[in-house]
Image (cartoon, rainbow, N blue to C red; front, top):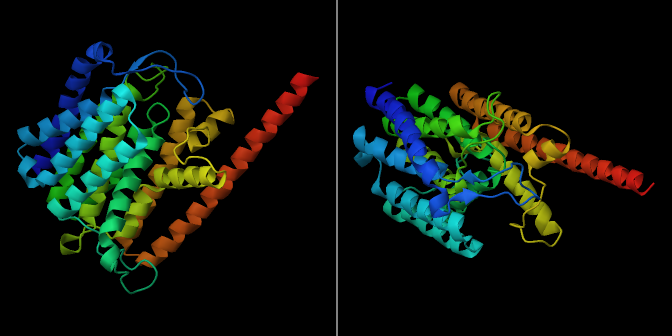
Length: 358
């Protein structure tokens, strides 16, 4: 592991800690606070939403001080800034979903046409032959970017959850980058890892802190999603491939599965797929009686194991289509367990209503 990468991790941690200390006391002055309004909220009291800004600025400052900013394509920094600014506006004035989607599409197109990152193939997903995308390469790359961005954004519904899931994904990317001496990926991923770790120090519930002191905000969850999309698509590029596209499924298994299942359920009920409800995995666990901190730790543990399994499959050279079919089996099991949880919650609510009437 090169010294630049280690320096990037340490700088990312220190600079982001300092930025959080600076921004948090000033958040209320600029309206960057989250005020609970019941329903899906599982926290009490107003909380600064400047964690994402601290991560983005911390990462940029780290890149400049560790002198690796120019090693990462300018399209990454442009897209990250665009996403972060849009997220900040959303935190302030609640933007329409169409506006956020439009910005995400622009950021994805910057990644493709300026940064040169595109999914030309999904790898040997179904058999020993590569599944080439042809004319669908651009739209499917855009879809992949938007999917990861929104998966991280929608998973950020409990203290420490979204940041922790992003940390786990980036951690295993760093492990693969270190094992392969993939310098560009390793330096950026370790820098980002340090920034996220600093945020989690204020965001995770611990025995000595009953609630988060700071939130990511949409600026943070959207930016982390974009950074993760960049890292995974960059790592899957054929000219200097770190891992095949199927490994990315394992790295973001929980947020992607949660997003697909929630949105599909809403669409089947004739609702807006972005309609807020309590059907996310963390809501289900909490409604089943699990404390918030324990529910988050449980989800993190599952995500860590799945990402580790994907990394192990990569290290052992397991065939890509075997990894894909196994991932689909895990996804099917996830659907079954989520449905069981929702049915149990519904049954408990029906029983409680009956008792209340009596």
